[in-house]
Amino acid sequence: MKGQRDQHRLLLQRWRIFFSGHSSYHIKLLVLVAILLSTALLARRASSLMGWRHGTAECQDRMRQRYTVLINTWKRNDLLKKSVAHYSTCKGIDAFRVVWSEPEMPSSELHLALLDSIAKNRRGSRAPELHFDINREDNLNNRFKPSKGLTTDAVFSVDDDVLVSCGTMAFAFNVWLSARDTMVGFVPRMHWVQSKSQIPAQTTYKYGGWWTVWWTGSYSMVLSKVAFFHKKYLELYTHQMPRIIRNYVANERNCEDIAMSFLVANATGGPPIWVKGRIVEIGSSGISSLTDHNHKRSRCLNYFTTLFGGMPLVATSVKAVNSKREWSW
Ligand SMILES: *[C@@H]1O[C@H](CO)[C@@H](O)[C@H](O)[C@H]1NC(C)=O
Image 1 (cartoon, helix red, strand yellow):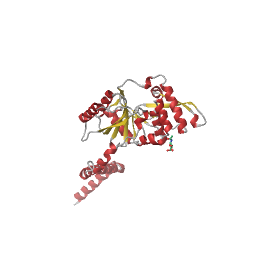
Image 2 (cartoon, protein in one colour):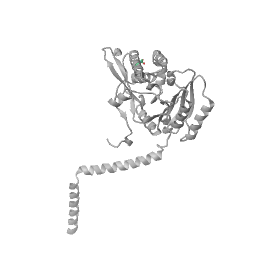
Image 3 (tube, helix red, strand yellow):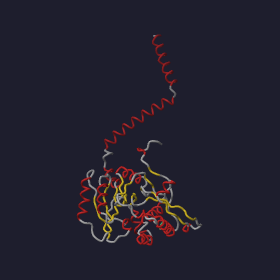
Image 4 (cartoon, helix red, strand yellow):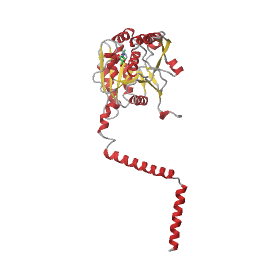
């Protein structure tokens, strides 16, 4: 009888020692971890039982998870073929739309070659569609004409001689998905104040090429020759933006990308996003190698500023990088 009571007392003492050794904080933490673990396990089971992973919501979202590649080409069929062959190896492409600006229709040989490389490289159940947007006259504004039958919200606008790896594309598209009104691209450019005026529309600006962006880390535009943006901007560019700007672009054969940057900045009030990634230019370098290129670009900046009633571009130094590829914080 007495021995049993002593045993009980001993047990009670041990418990007290155990609990005094572990503060209530520790025990709460232990309980919390146990609850979280079992909740996570249950949730996983429930979601796979209820088919959340394979449900219909995902099907409906698919169009939101895909993008259209809008390729601007001009008399360079070999580059166009290379470009389509490359991009058709990438996932997430709903359709290719080729902006064609020549008096002759695309040849059936070209058409078949493109279809062939799309079919050959197709990933998943459905190969991307192929459309030609035919323009008989050559006009830089063609590339921003709203394309009939363009179903995705996201447009990847690209020149026929610019290649980006599929991994980099997928990453940039993800950046765009988290900022769907913003232009997301790989080639940053900057506007610098040249002389300040009290009247915003009279302040003058200088165009900053890659060198000044590299030197300062600041930019306010990403060039539309390789960028993601929402399809609504095609509509705005072609039907809402003052015609005088499109006329200027057509006559000068330049600055359609600056006009698009102004338009998006004016609509969002914010800067674009520069994504880290290497682009490969397979054609010969075009107008940007001319010596008066920056001068012309500065003139566009100043002309558009007066037409917009002020400078809409917003500078930033934010650069999106893939954290899986970065070693340090
Ligand atoms: C700039 O944005 C405002 C407000 O959305 C709009 O009313 C105006 O037409 C835009 N300016 C130009 C030149 O597109």
